[in-house]
Length: 312
Image 1: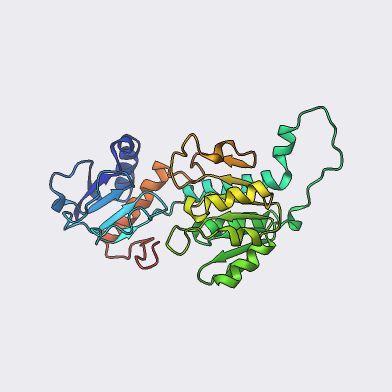
Image 2 (image 1 turned 90 degrees about the vertical axis):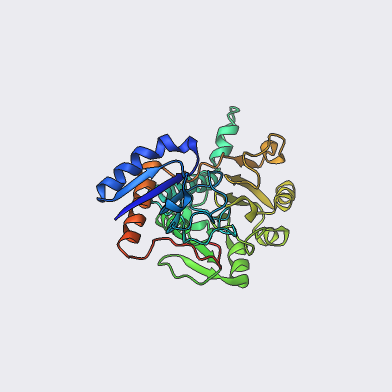
């Protein structure tokens, strides 16, 4: 079957993705025409999408069989009332690897106190400032989807006691899993380092508010490579100022790029990174897109289809 895939992820991404998508289609033997314009929306079988791209109104795409998102997060599209076609989020092994490396690196950075050594090159030999072993420092992962599970398992292999929390119950070997409101409190009260990898939904927005930040052990660290609005910014700043939270390493924000005058930039207990924890990479993401098109054309279920009611 011949199909047409419309690359609606924006012209800036077209040159980076086109050769990889065409190669991935060829490797799977797919007869797919890849276009970056859609003069006739009714002739499009698949939309390859990214927020801020070329489509906001999906209603003219009457023949489209699926919208294939290049991002792991779908909060900027899932509520679009014109989107009636199946929506698939990006679950890419390279994206997962990138997130695991970023999370592991920053957990180890805080665990080992690396910042203190870098910032205090003052000629003072501070013998005896030895961090605890990993097995003595509990780390919590909030969100146990693809990225959260992989990060939790990587940290557990480094001997950290890993606490996991998700809205629905999960079981992961080697991870102390919790769910529900009581489970969240139990996890936060124990964790010296908290990593947030939750999807953004009405239930998770401002999840880490003043009350929940106060549950954490004094001086605990927050690492957020998930979604900016998971944390109440004003509550976090107050907790940082009081010392309740020792440091926050933030990769995602309510407004991106983070405005130049935002308090996070100048706060001595905040590290800002520019949304780089898990970038979608064209070669591997293209293979994911091609496989989903192959599956759909073969009558097989789409991978990573979004549950509209849950929002991810």
